[in-house]
Image (cartoon, rainbow, N blue to C red; front, side, top):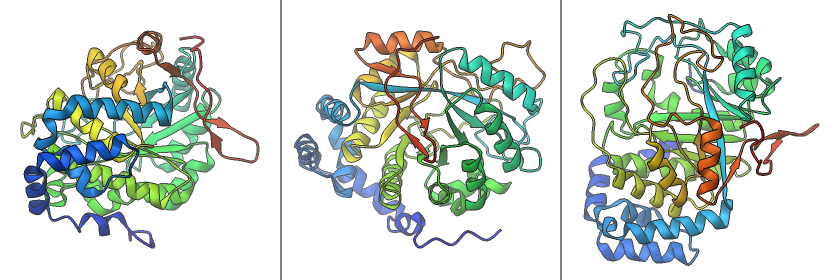
Length: 397
């Protein structure tokens, strides 16, 4: 399938950064450059790419506490004390890809299943009963079984329960994203996994996901199709975290320029245990992740930052104090894991989670930090798209 035409593609920006040269710049940034970048952010200045490199470099690590303080101040200025809550809903785990790091890899011997629309409705009702009003729909990459029409039908069913629906699915065309938008989907998440194109090819030896550029340009297509929330990220641990974090931040800033009316966010997922064997992990410590998040906030003052249940409960609480604006709660990474039905043959999770707190427990934790949990943040308006809702007291959670 040919790539949809675009007046400009992020790949044009990506190729400006030779990987070896980027690694050199990240390792060689002087401490004074990091201090200047922190000071500029504290004064409300717009940081440059060189500043962002300095903030992600080893030279910035001794100043992590100051970076975190600056990130917290910027987050309060732009987001107040609101922390948005959502939960993922896995519609299916059928997949035709051979991603070497993923539990849904078509070569892994796991049971496969797809939810019926009756099961989708039950999942939506169960999630709504917790007080949550925003969900993230996920599938494997198997268009014959979970094509755009199936996802759109699921969204229409779920709109009975949810004002906010996002998707984290395989790369779609602009026309397919428009179909989802017409069905009530308002946002999308797309993990590029790694921005290292050569490594990406080795990690994805077969399947449609192997097309690096088609995936890379998916958020732009979604924005042009009318989705108003675009979230990007790299799977930290697949390659050097400094380079992938830098390029994720550039991608987010590029999307902000291309889609100024959209809500742009970035996620910072780390590798977690899963079905299958993948040992070539580049370690990302807790301290590294704090640096990634603080640097992102200084470089992208108005971008959302998402931390999933891959992280421990106590660590997520710490990150919310710094710069995180969106977290998951009541998470199951198995297909149909919310309605409380007996275990099904296909209930094999994509990866292990570390924070198992319910929406009620997460809401209480957020309040204990002096923050405000937001359960509903997209509200449909007649004749319009969506707007940001006010913080909810969390009724029903």
